[in-house]
Image (cartoon, rainbow, N blue to C red; front, side, top):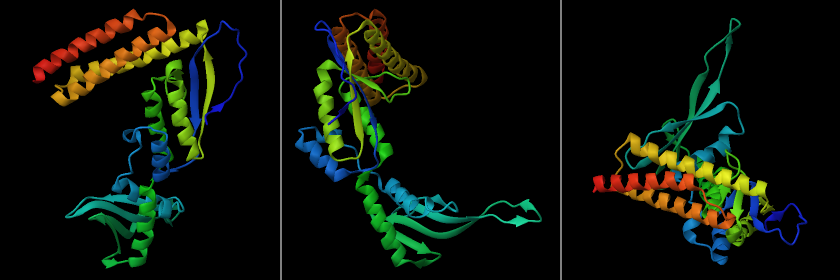
Length: 291
């Protein structure tokens, strides 16, 4: 379960506003194991991470097999052709000294690997290479079956946002989860820790004046940033009907989130209501024009 880093002694009059959470990732996660534990906990399958695309899985497989073990190997994308969705040429990089002058690097193609009809193909020159194909195919399937640490980081941010969290640092990484959604987040954290080597931490956030101020500042910054982004999109281009509908839903969710936090912290943030009301009116106007 999520690690609690502190035991805090508080008076009987103190109330928890929620918790502060962050995580340390411990490598990749098997997608099937995560999906099984996720469903067993009653969590929605729609929130599971997606399988890596074939092209991404192939690149990661080649990186693991050839690029990372050697500083002299590089990849170059091969454009799709015919039934192929493309692939990569694997290069050997060499650099020679001539008359005490460092020459430009020389790139020599070692082999090519590509995907066609869902199958990995490999060739050295014009000749097919069965052993190479088998090696890459095995690594390719392994990469499709796991969620990388990079993808997990993005996925966890989305999951903590699902429970109404706000980021306490501008660059993310540390989040406040409101008291009404703490158990929902702990369920996610428990499942994730069960199937991974990662750790999700938490400490209680007491309802002190400084804590409330920090949470409100984070909420205002997040809402203003999202509103500015949507206003900028409306200023720069004529959005299609689907795009406008998506942004209307985002705006409604943002308004609902602000109201939830106002109720939680027993305060009003009039400036945000004004900003979001103006944005909502602009989206309604854009929707009418797009119809």
